[in-house]
Amino acid sequence: MRRDVHTATGEAPGRVNLIGEHTDYHEGFVLPTVIPQRTYVTIVTRDDSRVRVRSTTMGPGWEEYRLGEEREGRGWLDYVAGVTAILAREGIALGGLDVEISSRIPIGGGVSSSAALTVSMLRALRALLALELDDVELALVARRVETDFVGAPVGVMDQMAASLGADGEALFIDTRTLHTQAVPLPHSIDLLVIHSGLTHAHAGGDYGVRREESFRAAALLGLKYLRDADPSCLTRLEELPPLLARRARHIITENARVLEAVSALRDGDGARLGELFAASHASMRDDYEISLPEIDTLVRLGIGHPDVYAARLTGGGFGGSVVMLAKAGRGRAAAEAVLGAYRDATGRDGRIIVPDSGDGN
Image (cartoon, rainbow, N blue to C red; front, side, top):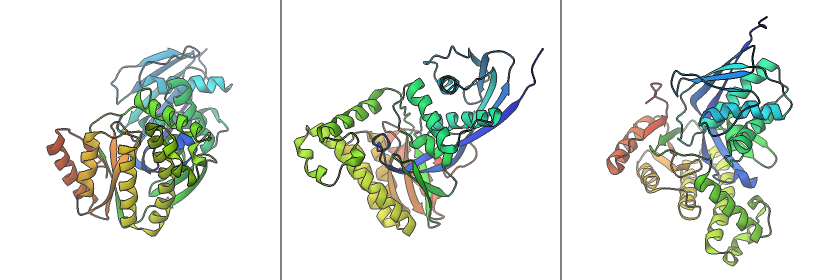
């Protein structure tokens, strides 16, 4: 006899990181904010052990697997299979599910489409099963999906932002203590996010290499995490191999920039934010070496526009998006002008993510 059918929904936003790149896996400071685009998940229970998944973004067909037989390597499906696999490891019993996903968050844009998917899936399951997970605990489970199942060596920022972030606020996160503070975005500033047209991925590749190099640098400084570096460590960087010195310098100085950016946001100080964004991008380009020529061009065009205060690469690097801060009321026009100049200069399409046009373009 078929058991009763139950259904539940969950949703979560994408995020853009204002400042604080590659600091979270060193238990440092980050300052993300959510974007308008969201991911929505609807779950319907089944009377067997199959999980069927369909995503409007990926096409009309169903993908499926059996509970207990989850395996990585199936692309976007890994983020759903990872949720059921990690919950099973936590001793949470699941039955079969039909999972329908819709999302307007650009994939590969450096705005955490994967974290939004895992958090929205976990929110739906929390509602369906009455799981006793608060928003921080939910974010930690979502992170385990990426690190333990998908194999992406990410910190906790993306999942925390998707789970705890709110419109109109930046979320200051101490990734060691998981303490958060909401920092209102000033009314004098428009947030802009422009996708470079170059895709970005965390799993494997240079992201993992940078992480490994940074921990080697920390060890040579006698530290487990670069979060614990005091100012004297900057003077000791010359003792390190040049490449590792650059990696450490980025993370040490980036942590300091996050703290300054929190104060500048609270003061509505666009000029100071511009200086901090510029220093952050230069550090990512020269010390962490995660930018690309097209990204540098987009940043240069952004800061060259008279209505833009600040511009920098956002996300893990090697593609993705640039975040900008513009004069209030002038953001859309500035973004369109910058994107047009970028297309002319690089031949890349790119697209404006924020402000959201609402038409998917």
